[in-house]
Length: 589
Image 1 (cartoon, one colour):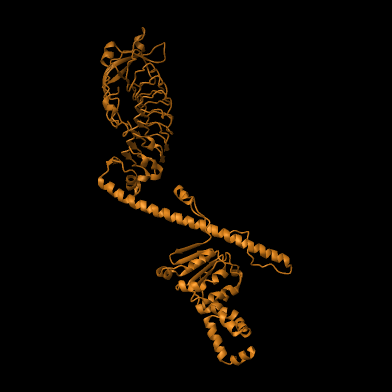
Image 2 (cartoon, rainbow, N blue to C red):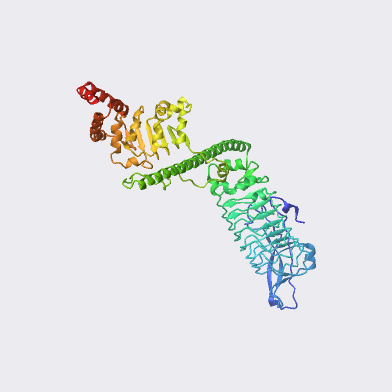
C-alpha cells in the first residue's frame, strides 16, 4: 500500500524514502581494475511536496552516504547490482539510484520484493531490466532522457509512475497499469492526451509543460481528482465535465482567450479549485465575474479563496448578463424575422413584376408597330434589396425553425421612420396609432408597393402622421412624371427620395425639375439627399411653366383646378378675375 501521506488528494509531501545503502556489485572473479566506484545518496526524498502545482521542477535534498561498487560484467552489457543481506533487511522494500550518472537501468537480482525504486537525475534513455520487480508500487524516473514509455507491462501493482522531465512524445504502453494512482508526465514533448481512458483508478495526472493545444479524450478517468495542464499551448478544453471526482484543475499559462472555449467547466459539479492566470482571458475586465457566474461551486480561483462578497457580486452581474442575453436574443430573432419577411415580400414582388413584363411582351408581339418601352422592368432580375446575413448561432437557429416565413408584408417603426414593405402594409394606416408614436414619425418609406396603390392612402397618411415630411420610394414602379401629381394632395413634403431601383422614372433627365415645378407649393428642401437651390427652382419654372400655360388654356376649369397645387390654383383664379376671364368664358362657349 502507498504511504498515507502520498495518497492525499492534493499530492502533497510523500514519505521520505530512506535509502541509505551499502551496495556491492558482485561478479565472478574480475580484476580490481574493472571496478567502478560511485557514491550513493542516502536519505533521499523520492516524492516532492505539492506534486502537481510545482511540476516537480526543483532539486531534491540529499546528502552523501555510503559507497557502492558497480562492476562491469563480461557476460552482459548492463551492470549488475546486488545488495548484502544486511542491507536488504535494513531497506527491504526500497532502492534509490539517484544521481549515479546511469545511462541504462542496471540488472537488479534478488530484489523481487522491491516496492519503491528511484532513478532520478540520471541519463537513462530506455526503461528496462525491471520486469522482474512485479511488486513494485512506485517507479521514479524523473529527469532522464527517456523517449518512449515501455518495459512496464509486467508491473501490474504499480501505483505511482513519475516520468517528468524526459523526452517522451506520446502516451503509450500503459494498458496493464490499471491500478495506477499517480501519473506524472510533465516537462515532456506530448502533443495529445491519449491511451489513458482505462486508468479508472488514476487520481493525479500531471501534463504540465508539454505541447498540448487542446484538452479532450478524458472519458473513463472516474477517480481523477487533480489535473495539471499548466504551461502548454491550450486554446480549448473539453470532456472535463465527464470527470465526476475532479476537484483541482490547473490551466495557468496557456492560450485560453474566452470562457466559451472552456464552457464545459460550468457543468463540472465537483470542481472547486481552478487557475487561469497567465492566459489572455485573465487580462479581461470581465474575467473573474464571468468565471464565478458560470462556476458557482468554486472555492478557489487562481490560488486565492473566493469571498462571499465576490460571490454576491457575481450573482448580481449574472442576472444582469442573463437579462442582456435574453434581450439580445430577442433582438436577433426579430432582426432575422424581418430579413426573412422582406425576402419573402421581395420574391412576391419579383413574381408580380415578371407577370407584368410577360404580359407587356405578349402585347408587343401582337402589335409589331409598337416600340418597346425603354423603361420596361426585367422580371427575371430578382431584387437585391434583402440584406445578407452571417451564420446564426445554434440557439437562434432553433428559435427560427418555428418562424413563419409566409408573411407578405412588414410594418416597422424605427425611431422617427415608418417603413412599409408589401401592399398589405398599407392597411396598417387604419390602426389606432398612439399620439406619441404618430407624432414622432417624420419619415415614411414605401418598398415593394405599387405607387398607384400608395396614392389611395395618401389622405390617410396626411391625417395619421401630420409631422411626416420625408417620403421614400423604393421598388414602387414610378414610371411616369404624371404620377408625381398625386403627391400634391399632401399637407407638406420637405424631402423626397426616389430610389433608382424599381423606379424607372429617375432615368428621365428632367424628372427632378418636374417634381420641383409640380410641388413648388411645398418649398422642397432636398431631393434624393441633394439640397434644392434657387437656381433649381428657376430652371424648373423655365422648363415646365410654358407647358402649364398651354395646359391651362386647353383643360376645363374644374379639371385644371383638381390637378393644380394650392399656389397654382391661386394664380389661376387671379387670371380668371383679370383680362383672361373674358377669353376663358369665350373658350367655354
